[in-house]
Length: 119
Length: 113
Image 1 (cartoon, chains in turn brown, green):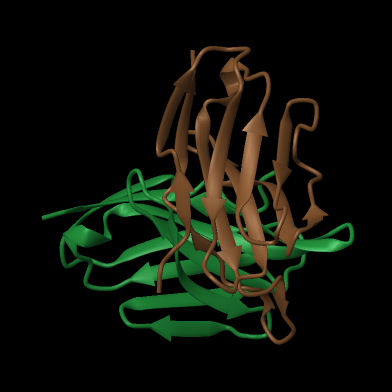
Image 2 (tube, rainbow over the protein chains, first blue to last red):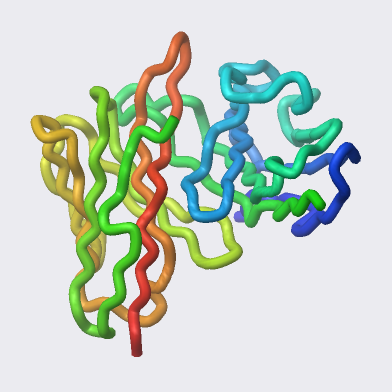
């Protein structure tokens, strides 16, 4: 089974530029997540989708970040304009469903991430 | 905000020794999950323990959960150099109308050959 794919793996941009990240989840997974992981910290959820609808985007800086999952499969995360503090690894994850009634939040499968450096 | 906090922040042990990492959290949870992250890679799910469970095993991993103390521990027995990684606990909690995983800041484990 193919895992979660992300591209690019690395990106270096200057502040105020724009950048976009792409994610292809595991086939059949309804739920997709974008996380931001700053060096030395745990991942922080930015946005989660159930199919093509947004479930939670409370931690997404909406003045500069946007994300979409148009057909309920692939997703893109965009930053425009980028700031120095956006330097981080952006992780995409997917799960079969949002919740398993018996267990709670379903197991999430992560991609390798995109390491963004903003100069 | 971070829900779980791991302790210690860093741990260095000799191959063959056991490694214990602890996680504390603040609010009630539905489940608690442990993930591993190798340098430069994504996270890999290790084990999930539900709020009504006290202990769970998976191979060389043993996880305990004490909901009265709001804490969990991950024990790796007979460690190997390949276990070198960062380990994160993640708590599953309800926020507004949705549920989400809240990750701690992680324990960086170094297993010396």
